[in-house]
Length: 101
Image 1: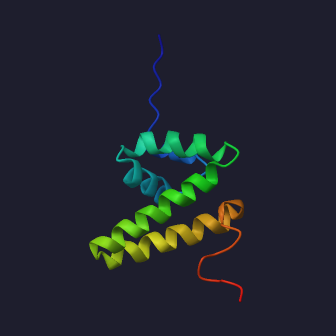
Image 2 (image 1 turned 90 degrees about the vertical axis):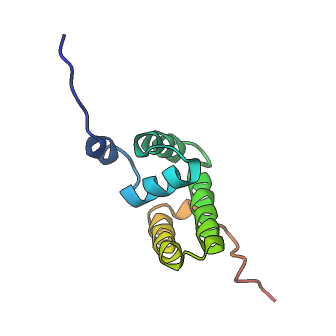
């Protein structure tokens, strides 16, 4: 019997998310990175899955803000920006900061 070992990097390479996006999922779900890769890949292939990932990252941002962790908040904002650039369908149609008067 032949066993093939797949590394974490191999799994990440097969995923449609960046390492930082996967780490945000892992943080939100309190799971190891390999589990977050599986969750992320599953969600990317679901009808509203990218919206769910967007929500997770936003919740991570809010949590880091509430802890006063400015450095992590800025990092997660960059992750969110990159995620939206790669998955524009996940962005909300109306942003709360752009109310139309």
